[in-house]
Length: 453
Image 1 (cartoon, rainbow, N blue to C red):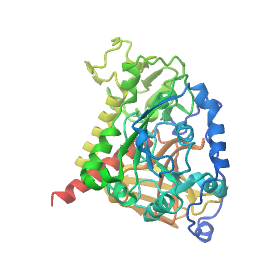
Image 2 (cartoon, rainbow, N blue to C red):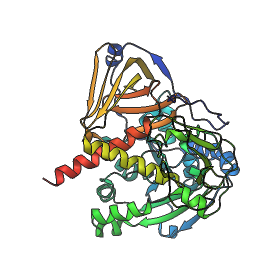
Image 3 (cartoon, helix red, strand yellow):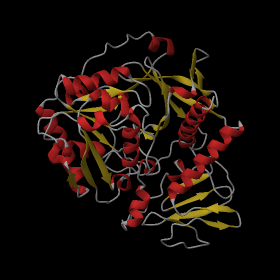
Image 4 (tube, rainbow, N blue to C red):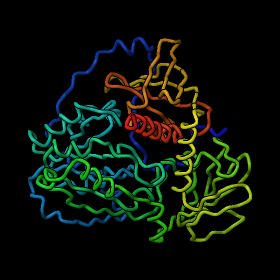
């Protein structure tokens, strides 16, 4: 089996580490619950500091940007900035593009661990991913109305695994009507190709650019229905960065470009084995049937048996269906998961190391346990039988899952407004991407079932 914690060559561009400690499960539950704090006004000093910390990586990536209709936005007018989420450089891009106005950043609550005061001073607002969060809405309204600050939000809430869009919350259109401020869209090109999440934070030499577009005025938001707003945003957040790489002939010469690709492409399309794929160097192969693909410099997959060149077609061979386009392979995996759910055979049961977050001091390692995912949702047990957490399918439209999280390992995160659990699978193959696909498809199936009644 392929280990869930893949060791890869890591460049100088690393994520911030996170503070951890070992503690008994009951002692963690007994820790005081932190009191909610409203956002604080962002000081010019911190805005400049963010910009200066971003300059080096933006210069290395030869960053450029283009403005579209931004003359409509007044210099001191607060706005909501929606940005697609592709890689770790996104925040640095935002720091450059937003440096002329105070802004708050909606970020995951674990980003506050060990640096709560600093993150608040920078202007960060904590959020729980993929969950209904009334407190977050209140904080954002407070930021734009009382602090007269813009708010930057990644509505996808998570990095793209395969370079295509991830689900948007269904409530985004309603939220625009509540906020009643102009909406600006930031779209990046090259950020995913430069540092895809599966590739162990290894950075490629790829030029990065962005478009900054004035999307909606408050008057336009008032005129349009929630469905119309959601439809426009869904269209704006539709992309395929492997296709972008291919169409624009973006060359990735690095010899590690397929490292960790098995995290995302976990299922062999030929023998259909799961957890037997290995992405290493420039190739991904199946350890069971030995089928092998090369990830070319221009983002295509090709096999030794049939050199597909720059073709993006799907071909057939004697052992099954092969793919030349990575997102096609990932979509096939999604459909396989959906069929497992429909037929009632989907079930994931894995041993995990469990961490908990109850405050911004650190995350606490509380022991070992078992994580089960089925049509009934998630069920996490552990810590000698004392931990018993259930998360139903409709609790979240997607899953907080990450590769190489804070350089600790691949993770699945669950939780509610009181506690967040971080589960690190042990010796079980690559299951994180499948768990996210299953969560998304299960949510859709349950909603479809409710609507058909």
